[in-house]
Length: 123
Image 1 (cartoon, helix red, strand yellow):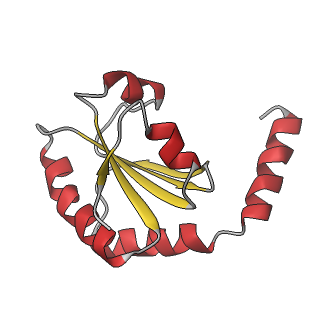
Image 2 (cartoon, one colour):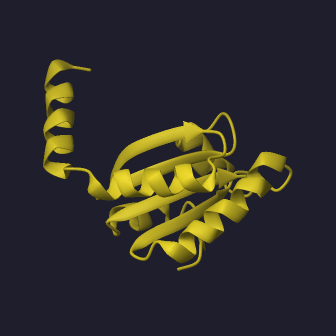
Image 3 (cartoon, helix red, strand yellow):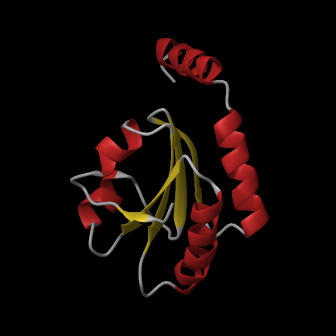
């Protein structure tokens, strides 16, 4: 699968409508973003069943603001519509592969239970 450009119009549907979604927030003027784009694209060809989305923070300023993006590149990983990873900075290929494996292997019942616990505690 190749990467998919996401906009404010399709971001939520993409994140909630797919089991695993990785989103790269980037900008054309950002050198580290351009370097990470090659790693991200290569990973998209290796990991079937994972959606690889890209958000151009210049073109989608409202979406970047709503996502709280203050540094790029920022990578977010969603599993079953739940944000399970968020980190600024570019990952290397091996680290990205490891992250994908970890996100795919998550026990989502445990994740939901932890979220419910945090919500009930007011965290």
